[in-house]
Amino acid sequence: MTADEDRAAVRRVRAGDAEAFEGIVRRWQRPLLNLAYRFCRNRAESEELVQDAFLRIYRKLDLYREEAAFSSWMFAVATRVFTSHVRRHKPRWLQIEELDRLPGGDDPSSPTDDRDRDETVRRAVGTLPGKYRDAIVLYYFLEQDVTQAAKALGVSTGTLKSRLFRGRDMLRTKIGSLLAPRPAATEA
Image (cartoon, rainbow, N blue to C red):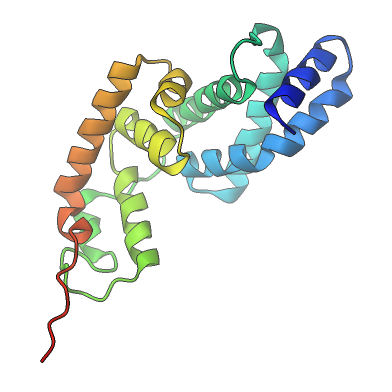
């Protein structure tokens, strides 16, 4: 389904064809599930959040303006659903002190493979305050551009850029040694 097909499906739903929404769900279920998982880190909870998001999207379809990309609008609505859930059900995020006990810890010479490194970064992102964490998740993990991520969070692009900068700075402080390039192995 393309962006034009999304718009056509929205028009059909607005005209009373509720079954047209099924195509939207099929196309966007996995991306929304990935986004929800980044917020709550629990598969079952993510699935419930996606259902809530689709319900909200369906109910608010009249607010969608077709000059904008449907995906941007949909991600903005879903992000608000996920963010509200996280605020109501504060997850147990990894504490800064626990980062040293993760694979690789703060020893840059330890043998940490890419998966361990990625998981450490993801956990460290989870320790960030919500506004920085949300900005980083949308921009880096979901690869939304600045405009899309700002719209999803309901902030200006300047605010988003500031949150990205501060979030990266916090991450550098927390796990900078792990993220530093490894020295090249020397030959004997």
